Image 1 (spheres, helix red, strand yellow):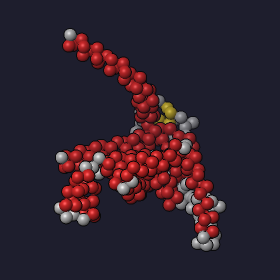
Image 2: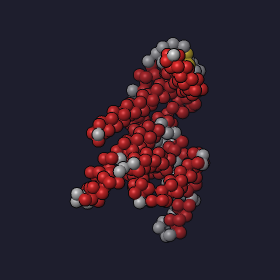
Image 3: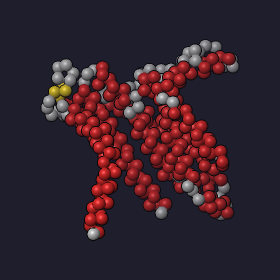
Image 4: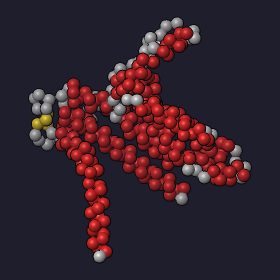
Length: 288
């Protein structure tokens, strides 16, 4: 009877999970396998995929022309993550400890702009930072500049776009981690004579490290493969992995090499995730 009940429970669980499993296989596993197969294929004379098994695409990735692109992608991801943490942590701290009853409203105001389509939001930054945009008009109206400042097509413009795009994904996990801290621990630190700064570095920040690590993961991984922001705000001058994949597939008609770059990007992301999981485990063990 117990075995029958267990089997019926397993069948019911499988039936409930079946739609999600089917969607995951069709929309995730199958495309990944196709890209993986393309990365080992040969390229025909017309830029398509020819049957065969070759490591030529992966060997080409280690040519001097492509290594700077990987380095540039990692650099942009690191700077974007650092900027999001530098701006996002104070915001999350204010929401958790200072906003009080206004915290839900402020969180909603933080998220409302991201209900708008991503391309529309990035295009609005093009309007703001254009030569005749609102930023240049405001600077000229205040008498700070005599002529428009060139902002679009520059590295700082890309960083502004990255910060704007990924800031909520940094704020939310840090806020969730800070919000669960037992306030009695902070009171105990104050009773033991710790000042505000010492209490923060020895109590608050260590307890918020899981949220910080989650924020790093949520920003760094997608920032390595972002495409629209460097193209729209940077003019496509800084080629990163996202740009390279699109160019190889659509412009250069080199599908095997584009698939190999996609697999390498997935491998780099997986390495970051594994490193995050191990580091998070060590942090949890240390805090326990």
